[in-house]
Image 1 (cartoon, one colour):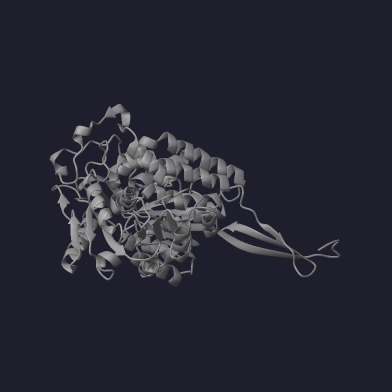
Image 2 (cartoon, one colour):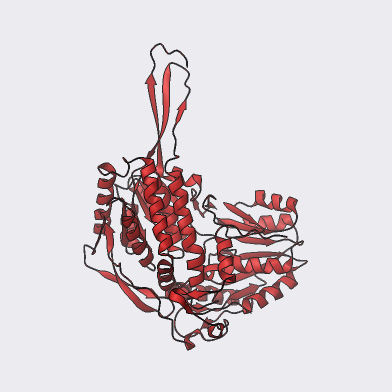
Length: 535
C-alpha cells in the first residue's frame, strides 16, 4: 500500500526525514535529543535566531500603540517566560481598524485596481515571505512551541503556496450572463463583500492567516484581523512584508488582544460586513451569537473536532501505526482535525496497540529548536492543565493508561505522549476535544459498528480511513458524516482542497475555490431590451 503524502503532510514528512540545520548554519547534534521520558528542563533553552521587531497594532498602514496604552505579555512555551510585551487592542482599537478598513474599501484603490494588479501584489508578498522563511519560522516556533523543522520546512512553504494560489484566483473571478424568460439582459455579478473581520487561532497562526487573508484580499475586500493572544508575533511581522509588497494602507489591519474585548468588539461591529473565525466550538457559538445580534453579518466558522481514524483488518499494521501516530501527535496534538479516536479492527488490535506504544516511546520531545525533535511544549499553562485534567479523567473513568500521562521536566509545558486503551465511547476522553498528545485506541468488529460509533459525535470535521480494499474505502468515505475523509493518508492540506466541518465543527469551507464565495456578494442586474435581435 502506498500512503498518500501530498500537501502539508508531504512537506512535514520530508522535514522529519531531512538533516536539520539551524538557521545561520549552526548544526545541532543528535546527542542533544532526549526521548520523552527524559527531563526536558535539564538543558538550557536555545536562544532563537530572531529578534522581535513588531509589537504594535497595524492600523491604516502604520504600527501604532493601543488607544489605552496597555500591553500584554506573550510567553515562550518552553519556559513560561516573557518573550515581549505586545499592544493590547480593545474595542476602541477595533473601531479604529474598522474605520481604516472601511475608508480603504470605500475610497481607496484596492477594490478599484485591476484584478491583475491585485494578483501581482499578492505574488510579490508570497515572494517576500519565501525570502524571510527562516526568520518567520523561528518566530513562529518561539511564540508557539512547534518544532522549527515543521515551521520552516512545511508551514512557511505552505503559507507561500496558499498565497500564490489565491493570487492566481484574483483575476479569474467571473460573473455570468444568464438567459431570462423575456426581453431582458441579465448579468450576475460577483462583488467584494466589503470589510472582513477575521479571528485566527494560536495552533497554526501563519497558516490560518493565509487561509483567511488570502481569499479575502484576492476578492478585493479589506480586512481587520484579530490574532490569538497567545501567538501575536508572526502575524505582525508578516504583515510588514505585505506593506513592502505594495498593499495600500488600510487594506489589512492587525489587532492583537483578548477574545472578550477585541474579539467580541469585532464580531459585534456594525460596520463589519463579513466574519470568519477559527477556534473552539464554544467560542464559535459566542461569535455567531454576537454577529447575529449586531448586523446579521455572514459568518464562516472552522471549529473543533474529535476525528475518528479507522484502521481496517486488512491494514499493514506497521504503516497504520505510523500514520495513526502522525494523525494524533502532529503539532503536539493541537490540531482541530487530529485523529484522536483510533478505531482498530479486533483482528489486529493487540498487535497495533503494542506497536503504537513502541512508536510513542520513541517520540522525541524537547526544545523545538533542536534537530530531530518531533514534539515541543503545549502552548501555555491553561492548555497544559486542561490536557492533564483529561488524562486524570481518563484514569479515574477506568480507561487503561498504556503509556505516558505525566509532565516532562519542571519548566515549560511539556507532556509525555499518552495512550489510552479500554476506553468507553461515553468517557470524556472519547467525546471531548482534548487538543493535546493523548491517543485513545478503540476496538471494533465490523464496518456497520464502526460507522455508527464514529458518527456518534457532536463533531464532524474530519476522519481517516486505512484499508487496502477500495470498496471498504468507498463505503466509509460516504458513510462518515465529516467534511474531509483522508484515505490512507492524513492531514493533506493542499491549497485547492476545501476544509470545514459538519455538525458542531463549523459552518462553511475554507481553502479551494469554495473559500472565495465567503468573500463575495452576488448581485443580479436586469436590463430591459428593446426589440432584441435574439434572446
